[in-house]
Amino acid sequence: MGMFDTVTFHYRMPDGETESEYQTKDLDCECAFYEISAEGRLLRWPENADELAETGFDGCITVCARQCYHLYLTHGQLEWIEVCSQDNKRYPFEPANALPELG
Image 1 (tube, rainbow, N blue to C red):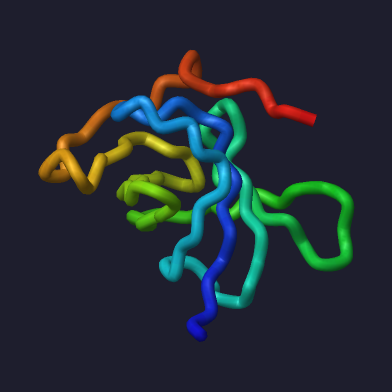
Image 2 (image 1 turned 60 degrees about the horizontal axis):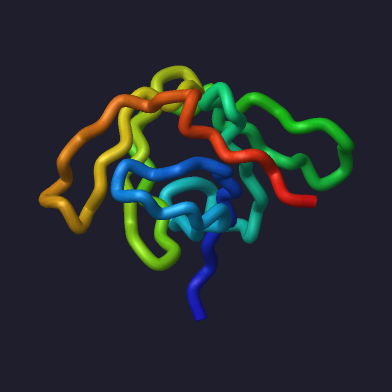
């Protein structure tokens, strides 16, 4: 069994998917929990804290659930989303596509 991190992202993806829990092996692979905010910030849940922490991550992470996506970030800000099943067609991050969190 491989190690991975969990990324929560409440967002309507460009292909219409609305999954909110994804797995990635492109971050720390420490079974850590991350969240992408409605504003597109990649945040990490620290083990012993109540507040999310900025990551400042630069680069691309691949997140997978039913579908896989490449997320391109600059200084922790999501810029682009590529849909792997659409020959990596690239879409800009649109905050208006954020979904409300269901509690």
